Length: 342
Image (tube, rainbow, N blue to C red; front, side):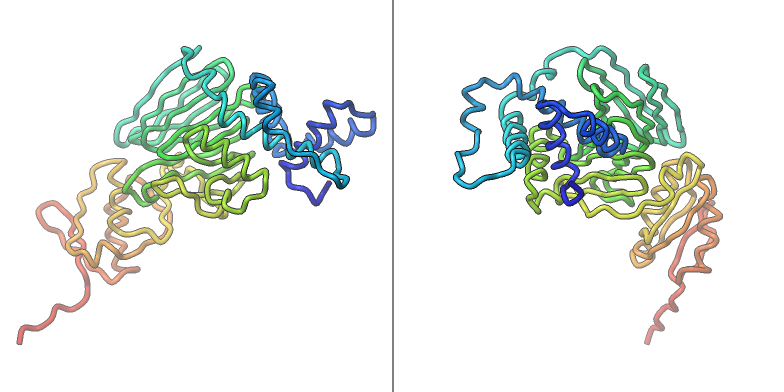
């Protein structure tokens, strides 16, 4: 089974568990399930399988694969059937909870420079950064968070039968139990899409629309290469970023996740104007960029959120700029010599 994807392994174990496991198979299954990523995939597969029970038998029959003449392993047929039923769920029934009232609902908003910790009733802890707007709704079968703007770090309580989704911008992050950050600040140093970075566990990132999200998950199970641009699973110390439409970058290594919790800003080849805008989220920044060519210069490093002035005064040591005090402001100028008039 080692040469199979996690999704294929989950589909195989689901089919075998429904048929009945021997004692040896049960031991192997429990060992396989002890890996968090495996448990996550299997739980999600179970939830999707349960949802197919609401599909009329006539619709299921239409989706069954045509008979094949050559012999095929039963688990491969089971995996294919799981994927086909998943597509049926996409087209048939994910509206069950859409029109029900939440069992718990609350909203929070932080101001510039304000950070806040929120303790949710299930034991989940959320840290909100400055200028962040968050809405939480708990339903019978799911926990839903809407990050309208800002960035937040989630330490999610593990509830296999009640997964949490974080909706932000064009993206949906699905998680059962883990620690991760979501950032959505259009026109900022992170671009116009959503950035997700995982500290512990695993998070599935894909399109915000549930039908579209489940569709690409089915395509991923069928090993369609295009699915990687729309859906990915991040593990510990990985991050990804989407564009404004939700198309994903390939996962990359993550460092300094949620540095803002320690009052730090981390820049990685960030435009200078975007860097100053990030400082401004935490307080007044008496800085001004004097020219477009200065705004586009790039900076990297980790800095104290409350020391924008010290950051600016250090710039001439790393960039071709000079600073000038003018009307209670620090003006950042290019250090290139001005052209002489002829």
